Amino acid sequence: MPLLTRLGLPGDEQAWAALGFTVIDGTIRIGQVTCTFGQPAWGFDEVHADPDVLGVPTLVDSTAGPDGSSHPNGVTIVDHVVYWAPELDDTVTNLTAVLGDPPRRRFHPRGPDGPEMAFYRVGEPFIEAVTSGQPPALVGVAFKTPDLDGAVKAIRAAGGPIGDPKPAVQGGRIASVWHGHVGWGIAFMEPPAR
Image 1 (cartoon, one colour):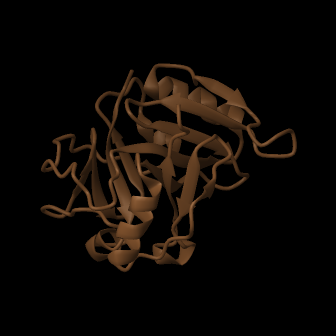
Image 2 (tube, rainbow, N blue to C red):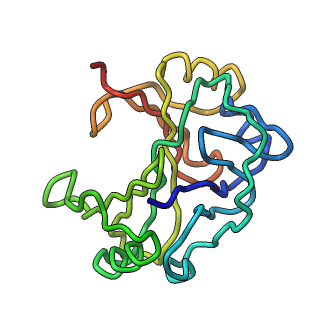
C-alpha cells in the first residue's frame, strides 16, 4: 500500500500556526505526513503509474520533515484529504492504477441524493474521492485529535477561526475552520468514544 507522505497546503506558515500547528523549518510534521505551504499537492512513497493522470500537483521530495508531532491543537494524524473529481469511474480507474490498490469502499455515504465517494487507505490517512462535476483538485483536509474541545480551545488561543464542535456524519465529533481562512476545507475530528 502506498503511503501519503507529503501534503501541500494552501496558505502560509502563519495561517497554519494560527490553527495550533507547530511549524518547524517551513513544514508541519503530522504522523507520517510532512506538510508544506503554498498550493494543494500530494506525494506518495511509491506509485504504480504516472500520478499526473490525477490532475493534482505531485510533491516528489519524500524526505521527512523535522519531527514536530507535538502540536498545541493535539492533532496526531491526517485523517483524510478530500479529492474532487469530475466523475468517479475514471477517477477510480486512475487512482487504482497510481496507488496499485482498489478503493476500500465506494458508495453514497450521505444517501442516494448525496455525492458518490470512493475511499482509499494511504497509510494513516485516506483519500476521500468525491464526484463533484468539477476539475480534479485537492479541496480539503481533516485532522484527527483525541480531544476536540482542547483542539478548539488551542486554535482559538492561537487566533484561528474555528466553529464549535458538532456531531460528525461518520460518528464522533467535528469542528470546521471558517472557509475564508485559507480558502480550503479544513476540519478537526475526534473519533467516536469506544
